[in-house]
Image (cartoon, rainbow over all chains, first blue to last red; front, side, top):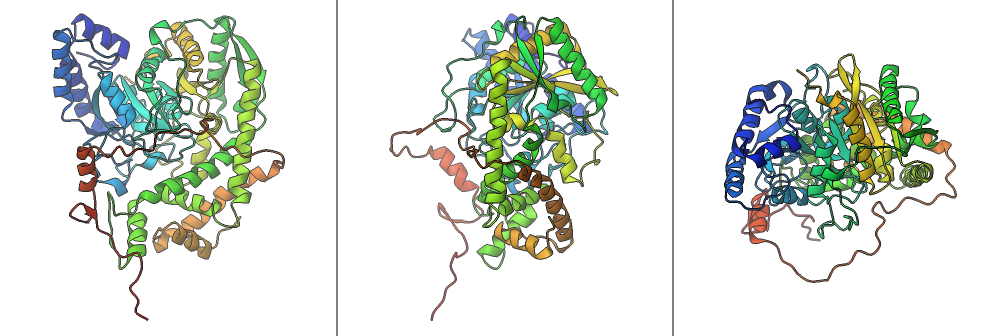
Length: 482
Length: 101
């Protein structure tokens, strides 16, 4: 049975009609992972209870019990989201051997929806990276070309879906870590509005920007996943009470009468002109579908990346203070407590994580706080205002997700600034807390290109409408690496 | 923006990170280049701009001040992750040195 191109919707229909069992489906994916993942390294481990969980779903279905919207659907989860009893490492050596004592809220909700948690996906260490080369457990390869990066930091989740190892996966975003790998791997990736999905059980990188997001082949599937995990959670004080929920079956496939803004700053220098052409053609397709296209200006965009790389390391340096070698994970003992901290953290963290912890410690330290951190928070206000202004005139914004297609493994590894520039079109949404989605829209040199759609806070529905309309008119999302 | 060796070591100390000797020069270069890039924020006049403070926009999220306890299984699993323990207590090195003066 070839399950490699199945969507959640297709698999769900076949499970419901009895054409397929959850057991057979889960085993097929596990076989694919076993046979092919040694080349890609999307998974860090697979669950040894997935098949028995699938059998239990089949039993409940046969007994006529009412089942959740993801009943029997295998889902991969990024290794920064804790799953009770599983080793959960954040892609870091410092958490090697750590077994999570509880389920993240998103995991609890996936279980309730009937999903089969099939395994944990590889990622950049503590979600810091744009290429997945910062994983302590080794890089992930792009299924379209195994000499290329899959993007990051949720590169394992994106590669797993693109390679047909799972129909869907969860990732996490702080500055583009779902949208960018989705773009580079030719699938759909959604970063919801800040507060839409509980962060309880998500390893904290930058608490004012982190969100759990979803990957799948179609916009409908991404919406199905979001619907399963979203909503207020008493365990996360920043999670929002939602007045609207997404109803995937009812996504209207029309953009007629919508106004879409194209920010001229998102086609700036440093962009691969062939990628720009592909994205312009996708925007033209939306125009043919009835949308009005309007050029807009978001004047502070060029400052977003600089503000991001102050705020995010500052929050990370504080959040990663918890890794002390005492309560969990890696431990390297010294003569005294100070030395134990320094050795544990010096040995347990990788280079990029140490770089960002030092950067954050510096910009928060006495004498530099005003010049860096406070300044960046003010610029964040200006970025947010750019979006508020834009949304007075347009329903959503369309632009590239990434300035380039996937690059060679190793190409930017020793140049952190060049690596950071890969996030230039995605960090704005995290700074402004708005939702964003990447949808496959073509190829350059045989490598996927993504169209980015950015929306008003809590208006994911408009993103779904635009994305679903586009997918209804094009076949890019049906392409596979084989 | 140029980082000296001493500055890198000072930040590493603040961040409780032991650095290998051979990595120090690379950190000097990397931190210098990143901070030179973020300097561009100084081009903007932000005198009248308030700081961005609340990502969620929510105000005063309260809950009842009651002890809910911890699920015994979760508690057990958390304790099992301790590096060293005595009974159910986390065992650590002394925070303060013993002195008799």
